[in-house]
Image (cartoon, rainbow, N blue to C red):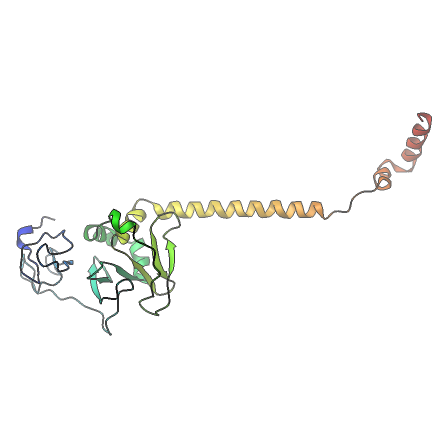
Length: 241
């Protein structure tokens, strides 16, 4: 799709803006892009009309009271990325993704492609930020820090059953990891770990059985010769003594 970059303007100050830019270069307003419902051309979420075909933009935003960002406490705003809806902080660019949306994101290639076009990976400064525990957007409890897929290297904040909060750029990293077969590699490694654990358990059980057997006495060992064999053995000992 070819986009006329010159036709896009910041919905806050009216200045010309690049559709790939995260913020307006003049007023620093957040520039979230969504597709036109008529011609599918990308445009800024705050614009009332599509800059190409003139269709009025209608965005369904979830009801209820505004929710604070787990990182900076600013208000989260609903955004649409492909077929998915999530919450984004206009101040720190963090993203809250509900559990069912996260599952769809990991499974649907169209959603992954739309997200890669919309979000950018972390820079070095963001990646080295200090670790902080954040509250869940829904229940307020502190979330767990989880290495996504166990091998991705992207650590996110997760509330099991509610969703996950990702700092700026982390969602891009996770989608890239999924599209490169990361989840398949993670499952394969997990199966290998389970098989290794089962082998170790069998070895431990076998050693325990061997160690629990009573020690054999000389008399017990000698019965293997039988009564006649035992008499012969004693006679041979006497002859050689």
